Image (tube, rainbow, N blue to C red; front, side, top):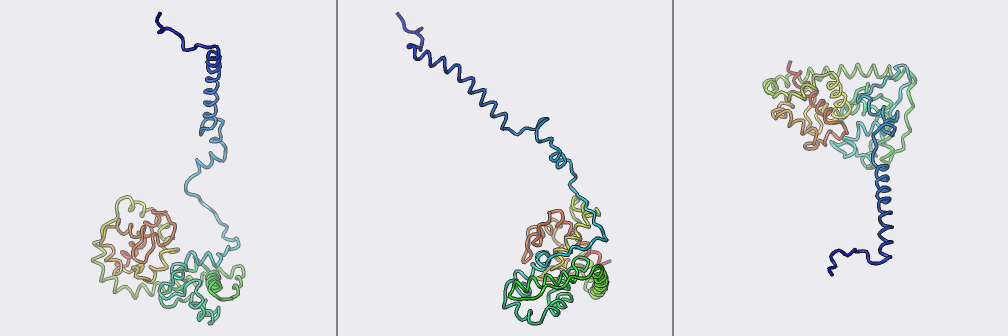
Length: 306
């Protein structure tokens, strides 16, 4: 006889094994499917995706408005915060003759002059350092500038006392007076540079216009404010005085050779750095804010010709 139709199960033990396997395998498959469903990222109703906090985070607007009480006590920045925001650009590498942060030999002759002299120098400017490090009294008060001086000096071998906090209301009056003096000095400087700026009028007039997308952003009030804010907090440290070869703010003659390149190339320099300028001026600003700051400085150079 032929063996073609014989069953593969030839012993009672094999029959029992097949019966058990046919019962257990479906159960194992079902358990694995249940585990997979439970561990996957659920987005349906009744899951965490619809929790109040998660929903609020998804639908909240990107831009946030924070309202401050103008009559509330002023929250002064610490010396470290002012240093990181303003002074680090020159004092960390010791650029343009600035005493290097942490270098006791650089700071010793300055510290020996006393706190009052250091504060006066910082507020008035000296050498390549612009007054107040290129900021305005609206940005940082005299007290906050003083705290930054103490922070740098004491981390460079000094033992200066922390300056006394101003009385409530006194800081605002001092800042307003200093702001007026700064504006007067800026106006005087602008008049002094008018002759040099007029020589670059033709070059500025030939500057290619920014591409449509950045131009549209630059024309908006929000983008203009963002550009001005970034310039004031970051770019001003070098561009206010032309430090380290940076084209000076409002100086058409200094900006003209840079702006012979397409505006997108100028944006690229600002975003990725060029020469001694670090990418984004060493800040963590967004690409759009950096471009807005470039537009702000370009427009100031163009405006100096009118």
